[in-house]
Image (cartoon, rainbow, N blue to C red; front, side):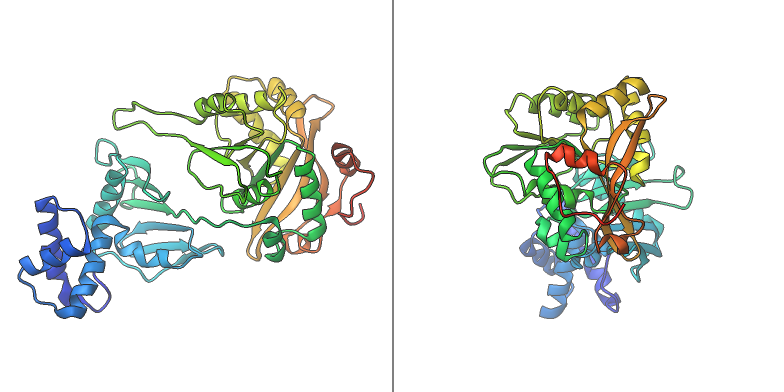
Length: 401
């Protein structure tokens, strides 16, 4: 049972009260916790009772010992590698914390409870699980013997942060001339793909760009987990649904893309492409749905083609078919890089075919580092092609070739 540091005397009261609540099947509320404390026969005083209420509520409904880590708004990820190895990501990479669990059994109990709270199952018969809690928090857990060192727990917090493109310029994610160019991309209703590694800011940038869309347009957002928060008056959302314990009732992204095409979207957006839904998304782009977009995991813009070919293979396409579909459907790839110094847009590229018919990404604007990108991107070999996509004679963006 969780207890605040230096409050070991509270532990018997916490355990007894929590046991009463579970035994009686009561809802976990401040009133039920206070009643259970009184029924357990432990007299804690007003200060101790308030502390106990917070601790028991966190233990039975929240993240238990991990709850204090969520109070820092910068925290996006929490991972537990063992009772004495809890790490967080606050935007600067993983940092070890002082949080400790009492035992491996306590870590396992928390993992099992969190997965069960989302309607999932985690036990020896199903030692891995992925679930979404109320509020959007995602939890992934692995039990021994799949995990050699003990129970592993990964928590990704849902941080609803609505940022406009101007906010990203102020934050140093891109220079104002490059932001102006991206506004032109949105006005021209070009199909785009935002790439980057985990935590690089792909979703943040996509949401900011969608905020630049004309207010009269209807945006249809399709996501596995709701993360996009565009500042737009007409955005509707479809969310995938996992199957139940028996595997029934699942609705995947492919189903939602097909349904979404019947909902009169002006812009069709897939939060993250990672499977066969790419077939239907590219098909929509190739049949008149302009201004569509998605994100994809990739370490560099140059590796995006290989990622797209891999996704196409999941949809049953050959590399040649995927390449042709991508070249005709996708106008631009915008790559976001995360380094120790922060995050920034480091490349805007166009897709085309090399002499062997293979898909490749050619830079229109680029920067060697995040720090250099904050002063503006340099022009690359596809710069003139980018201007042609925007139907502009000139754009004040990009330094010398």
